Length: 197
Image (tube, rainbow, N blue to C red; front, side, top):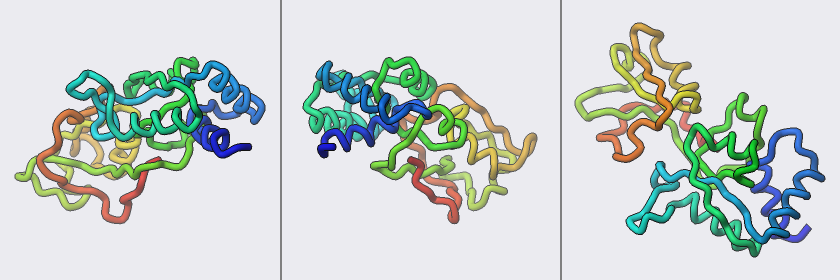
């Protein structure tokens, strides 16, 4: 297999529904090469990975990676803007050939899609104003925290946060605080700083 096909096969694995045979993955690659176009789902609400620039076009690290993959394949790229909630369904319904996104790996997601190695680390942390001192998960007691429902952040926070009613966790369908940076990093688990592929 030439380097271009090998690289795409790795990228396609990120988007392939588990259980897809090697023959199906090769067919998907052949379909992309035949169409001379690859549909890559990207975020547009999560700087610096994906956002809309002043020219109203998607830009960011994930968009650069999408363009790089298409360039290596010698095909045109169709950038498909997605949200946190619809990026996996877009793969399953073939609205996208692959997703490049800050998509954390967890057992539920691994049942329906495959993952490649991350090209950029992603750290999970709790953020808040400078006036709030949080050094351990126990310090989250009495606090109200917002996370994206079903995200890896949600899963990990639920593991360490004090149980209700000591800590109020609001689960939203939209990512909290993505448009403006937090005032300060308050707490992140010192022993569990991990890249989420």
